[in-house]
Amino acid sequence: MAVRAVRGAVQVGGNDRAEVLAGTAELVAAVMARNELSPEDVISVIFTATPDLTAEFPALAARQLGFQEVPLLCGAEIDVPGAMPRVVRLMMHIETTKPRSAIQHVYLRGAAALRLDIAQ
Image (tube, rainbow, N blue to C red; front, side, top):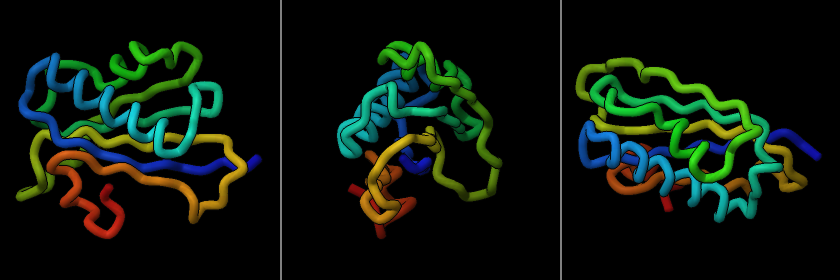
């Protein structure tokens, strides 16, 4: 088994609790599905949100998806002028037998523009 990191991001519609939770749940579910993971494979997840998203902690969406035993952390993204607004990002640390080249990073909705080279 190797430890790998999976990146992802989603742009949500607004600073609304339901929007943050729905977008984050969509992102986590997509990362899990595309990488054929279960919560037991996940070591930890770091979530960041742009400074304009304060309505809810993104980690709550992961808890609601069954990440009860997984350490989760939320933080604020750096407030860079001109950066894309309303973005939740994650870095998920996993245990897997897959090589680094087989990891599927996930960028959804408007956040696909952040990584056009790997966006799904």
